Length: 120
Image (cartoon, rainbow, N blue to C red):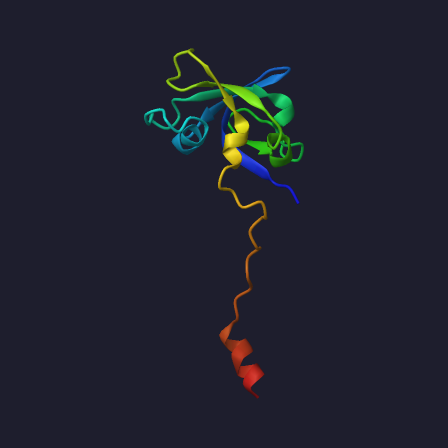
């Protein structure tokens, strides 16, 4: 089973690429040795075909990447300081330490009336 991974807010959608404003946790996964930056400073330019086919791209909305697409070598350009200077990163790093199975759905809660009927 596969699932999508949310990585940040969409700032630009072009024909073949997407520009995403990353949160610091995603920057840390992609470039662990780089010093912390303020959240929302770093930008990631990636190929549009890595994005989820289920959750469409919309400006200023969360960008979701297809987990299966990330399992292959998938490179992107990371602008850590938001100043236009980019470094190449392998997006497979986003998969590190992720559980490949989706979490269990919400559990139903018992109601007080249910317990009284069960004890009869």
